[in-house]
Length: 154
Image (tube, rainbow, N blue to C red; front, top):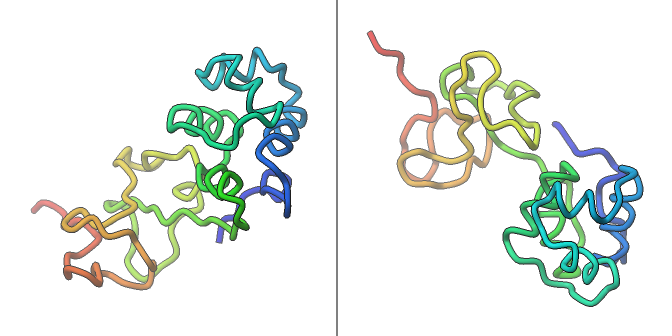
């Protein structure tokens, strides 16, 4: 199971303000550089780091998650004041994956969107019904019965 670096996981009772400051400090980034890299306004980042907001819009959340290389779920949890359980992405390449086996660790990386072996877009849900992948032990979607693995063209 791939888990994110422990230092990036929000600590118990840590506020959004403290969390963003800690991660920015660990990366050695200025507020200006973080704001620019994340694609958000410097004023927005300033409000977050001064504790003047505990809500993040989708653009801000996505930008910070991308720069810090963390799942957006971490930011959601800290904004809602709930603990963060270990997040594991359940993604796989429908062309390369062998059903019933664990996925390649590279498919589970936060930034991975495509298979590094064949270039196929990674799949995180059933293509037929949209239900999230719940286990790699199953060959078929438990909701609609559609096979996860694509059949090879003959």
